Length: 236
Image (tube, rainbow, N blue to C red; front, side, top):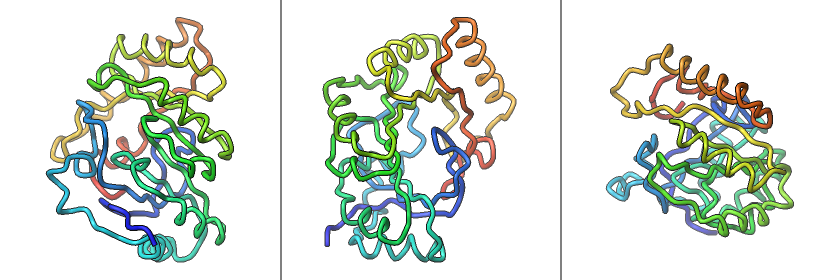
């Protein structure tokens, strides 16, 4: 049974963003990432400085914790990070599907995995210029192909400024067949910094106004619901 590096497992709570927003979910957050986004809101699962806090768990141990948290009631399990694509979730997905659970994964699209095709929902979230990272579009296309047999594959992009917005339009043009979700980014990511709901609402309205003014009707515009509800608190 494979060993997984796990930063935290928590829930049930609701999915706060993207195609499954509002859906009851248990989160399996992995440790480790090949990106270092400037506005990362989960450094505890990304930065190797936190390596000592990550648990080495075999697949059965992870699955047992998911079952305990969900009280054996099938729901959606979200594989997140960090970048969950670094690790092999084939066996976990197989175990869960056998008992009626659904699996979603969110990744930046830098590493393609065969198990993407077994997911119920694959969320590819390429990082815009404000992240400080550069997208390898060949690798991203490889992820799209790997997820060709998934229940659904969608693209989600966070937008912080006009440059990100213009970049998102170009990114969407590369993959016009992928359902697209946009959300304003939260730049106040430290756990001890209070989140201003009005500021978030203003950024959401700014993004809505831009897309409507440009007659860009392809994307769905969503808030980061978990930030509105719990701020930057971990484990919800």
